Amino acid sequence: MIPILCVSGFSGSGKTTVIEQLLPRLRERGLRVGTLKHDVHGAEPDREGKDTWRHARAGSQLVMMSGPRCVFTRRNVGEEPSLESLARYFQGEVDLVLAEGFSQSQLPKIEVFPLQPGGVLSRVPDPSRLIATVRAPVPFSGTPNFPGGDAEELADLVMRWRSATAAGEPQVTEPEPPSAGAEELAPAAPEMAGLLSPDGRTVRVLIDGRELPLKPFLGRMLTGILLGFLASLKWVGDPASIRVEVRREGEPEA
Image: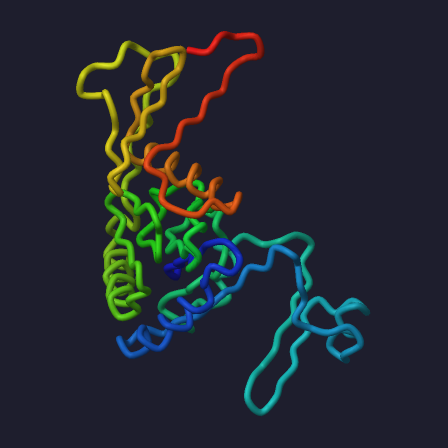
């Protein structure tokens, strides 16, 4: 199957800009690249009232329009096809498909974060699927981050990933082992007195006075969630510490 690399992120984060920057650089490096755009709202590029739209409405399963500069195809489907099935349309035409969106898929991804400092929440459910991030405020361990875009270096990374994929090597980093569950809580050992995240913040989670050991990824994720929450409340500044307590009604303060 043709390698598929998703460029994911929230709306307005700059996904299309990253793809625009990658396309000419990947072509210069000898790759034929196709693109695929996911629209969660189901928007149609064909306009109501146009001849091709009328053909589709009347029951044509496949509508094609030819012009001097491009060919437009519309195919009616009963349900949204999978990303892998869509990629088959590119077979024999390209060496790589850049898919904009598709954050929930299990395929490898570049995640793009907004320029605004409040955009700290990741949309990708499984960070082990990431081959790179762009402007991640809290970088993921072992995942290259490109804070300023760095399109040339990002294109080089995509080329290395494409070569590794063609050679059958792993496409993404291995996920970190899961952290201990609540049933494994125990008095914190001295070495678990705090977890230092990459940006210098110590992250601790206490449940009924006992510390829950955190893997580095979970500490970074929790930091990002809290900073994103504060940003949504128009908090300005870089807090030295954040304390959040959740307590059952009627329970005394610790």
